[in-house]
Length: 498
Image (cartoon, rainbow, N blue to C red; front, side):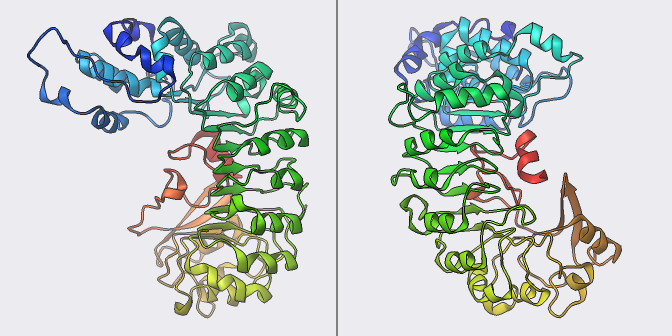
């Protein structure tokens, strides 16, 4: 992130005394800007008299969304503003420290030094973002990184203790070996304002052991509830079932929950407090869940009455969650608020079309991969009478889908002027469509990332931004977001490439 001691060594001036109350009382109010009260005249320039909320809006455009490559400083633009005047210094400092991103361990070490020497800076931190973190690079070996001790469980615990107003902790698999019981206790037990926690892909043995120790139903230290609203354990495959039994009943304010590819059980799901209001939910690839119990949970539990995003993506060759009967029970009773639905791998056939068709007028994302639909069924989605609102459609693995069928069948999708912006297909079908030279004439282009491939409409006035996407403009994300912003780094890999 570019935390340099020389740049912020003067952080202890009068601004620290004015904002010290904000950091010690636990309030999240934006601190006031300094001015010289000994002078009855205000000689500040007009720009320096703007409300702090305006500065936040302006300076947000100077924050890089991804760390720079090499040794280039990340906050060079903000650092220039920082030195312009006393007023702008105070406004900029909050912008720099409220969302702290750590691409490498030395950056975290500099950050820790700053908030240790100047505690008021720790009170400004709202987000600790390790989504771009890697322990390799910069010409160092793994052994060198271990010897440097820039980021360890001990230093991470120390950083959490110094950031009492923290709201979001965004981690991932590369940080797993540095998460022990003390880190989890500091994170979950002592931060009263914590709203979002993301451990995407973490499965290291130390991470597993720490969670098993701390998040155990019989742990006497466990509080009655956690303040967390958004929780992602996406692909945390090694966590024991006891972890979910302990943590899920203690989330009364839950709104976003990603348990993809975990060992969560049906009973743990049912233990979620009725006060929760879950709008984003992913139960993808959870082999311990049973279809009929999941349907019961979705239709009867008060916490999921206002769902907007539901991901039930399963690999049918390994485990099919929803049977034909489960689908019949679920489809007619889905919440009216739903806008994104992933049923890849469910036992869906032409018999279910009368239940699917009413959904296309309100859904924007629909995934039906590896189902048994015909091309005639699929084309029916775009018959005018159904007033399709679909922007994204996943047809991966459907045997009836082929390049010729997409272009030349009766009522074929691609020549039509539909609302579709993204059509996900197998790599073979995307390549086949390109060979027909028909995609470009229809205004589509080919894209791919990791294991996934798409046809994307080239000319559209819709930028794809939606409030339920939490700041992202991309379609088809299979990971539930825990923070507001465009999807990047390891989160993009898990959500858009796998």
